[in-house]
Length: 359
Ligand SMILES: Cc1cc2nc3c(=O)[nH]c(=O)nc-3n(C[C@H](O)[C@H](O)[C@H](O)COP(=O)(O)OP(=O)(O)OC[C@H]3O[C@@H](n4cnc5c(N)ncnc54)[C@H](O)[C@@H]3O)c2cc1C
Image 1 (spheres, rainbow, N blue to C red):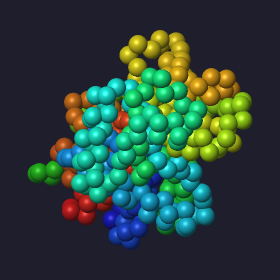
Image 2: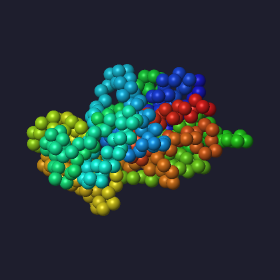
Image 3: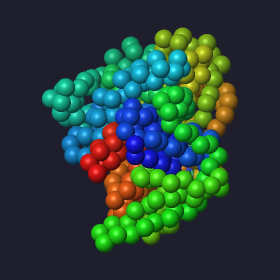
Image 4: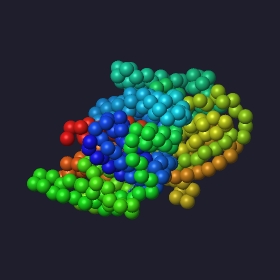
């Protein structure tokens, strides 16, 4: 059996651990310096914008499509194995504020149909029927993606970790990889030992899935991968008015702000982009204002909690980075997922498996 050491137990590392655990050729250890599911994944909203993304070809679309195809099976398998429930919201509505936007979505819908996926264009009358409480005064319509969905990223990661552990993966919480020892031959370098606050870990393959923590590790390996932390922010709110639950059962996105129904009159409201004009001291105000404008029932909602997180964006190359570290034949990077780590985790795991298997 080949020993595989994964550094990082966020959604990316956890998915890799689970998918590799299905292959009996590997003896897997996963290290996380905190509890897996903190860092970026702990802040994520879990919206899987695949079919509704503007990516239609090339690597960006292939990764999205691979994840969308794998997700239903993955969630079903780990839920059945562990007995855990992973909350999901099926369907995404993206609000459109101009005719030009609608035209772009119409073109995308045509492409998606040819690719075998569904996208519906709604006018304001259809929107009002589906969501009577929506403020349609700024809107010209919406695009509805019935096959995209949202998944609770924290529940998903915990369940992946639990299923991996049941499959024999050695999960080490509170273990920080601090140094890496390397040997060289004529052509390549190899990492053979990872040193940590809890001792040394020998390995045949090292997978760096440490999110923003990947930079210091790659610097140790003399191939620094620069990752810029990009702010994402969110809040959980509860409506005071007794709005029927049937009113909002899908994710709504408007102006880059997302509203996700959680049940019991509760919602997550958040943004996965930075707004350049937002005041640094009250960054969530912009998000909150935009959400209340298009979904007025939120106006008198109670804010139960707020949080922010940093997303790892690679500098000088596209997100995500899934490849052998330059100059090494046993170190694989699976990091830099920026805004789409939850969406792209299954495709990332599949690609990592291919890279290891090809070796
Ligand atoms: C507010 C917000 C909303 C978001 N919404 C979405 C969304 O809707 N959809 C979506 O797809 N994505 C979303 N994202 C992005 C998503 O959260 C990230 O892309 C994803 O979580 C990255 O996962 P990861 O496993 O690579 O990194 P992380 O979750 O950061 O995990 C890395 C892990 O590595 C560990 N680690 C680091 N260094 C070391 C070390 N030296 N030794 C041991 N362990 C180490 C850390 O403790 C951490 O647990 C959002 C992000 C934010 C902040």
